[in-house]
Length: 143
Image 1: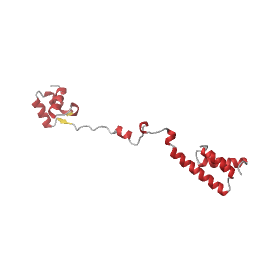
Image 2 (image 1 turned 180 degrees about the vertical axis):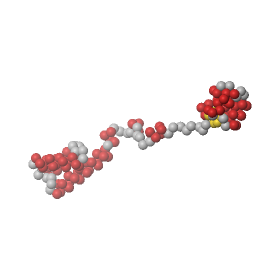
Image 3 (image 1 turned 90 degrees about the vertical axis):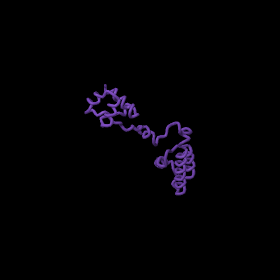
Image 4 (image 1 turned 60 degrees about the vertical axis):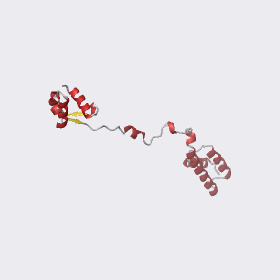
């Protein structure tokens, strides 16, 4: 009997799929000599034919998915989702402006102008705001 047929019979006897049948490659002649189901059962008992363990589903897709946030779970436009960071930046810049005004580094009129610029989103960070004030001082525009 061909190895293919023996594999099919062994799968039927062991009640598993054909892909889960292992046949010892060193004793393939014995497998080919098998003629009946009884012969296949004898080969199973002697360990020439064995049942492989079931393969578990791959975790690769789960690993790739973990910690990712797809577009389907986002609510609102990008700008709407960034409001929290914008609020934090604006508050930090306004705090800085108040400190500089109280120390006398920035005049009241310049403070008001810069305050409105901060409100308009002219400065992405405190550092950029400080650089802008420094450049105004170099040009002699800041009092």
